[in-house]
Amino acid sequence: MCHGAAMCKSGFGCVGLEVNRGLEKCAVLWQEAVPPSWISDTNAGEGRFTDQFKAERWRRVIVLRLCIPAGVPDTERLTMAKKTPVQLVKDQFGSKAELAGRLAAVLNRPESETAEEFVVRLSKASNTQLLRLWSAEERAKSEFGGRAALVSAVVKFKFPFKGNAGFQAKLETYTTARLLHMHDVLKKASKG
Image (cartoon, one colour):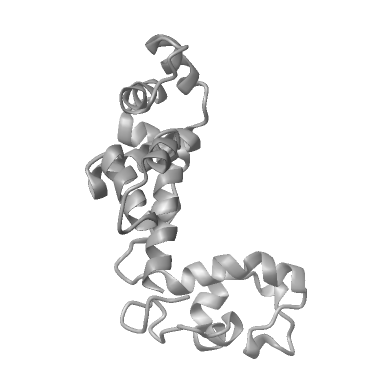
């Protein structure tokens, strides 16, 4: 899907158009993206493929060429891709060990583990898991001021008129991500 006629590199704004309909209006990009042998002679003006498999294979390439904003140079197209978890960890924290150390400082450590054992255990988790834990802790800190305020917010949504000490004690054992999910669900239910 294109960003709109003003930003479309092709100049015609292909918002909501089928890829083939968009290609009919932008023959220059069509000729750049697809080898001529893949287009049948009878349908060349309509921009149709002779082989459906090849059409699906090149669909993403064609859409990319049509929908890149006009101000983005060709050399930056490859950098627009989503970064991998390893790249995100290296960019934001420097290393996986650094992220594990920061998480160990903010997560609740089991009493049976020492701090070093906890860091080692966190270091064995995948980068995706560590980033998910970090984003949950950061969201709880930024939106609620901490885990205790998040727990009290969930209790307030569940029991609006009076608190429930047993429920609050149970919530203290939940992970931060689970508490955030419960808060979102209860908040949505209270609006509806």
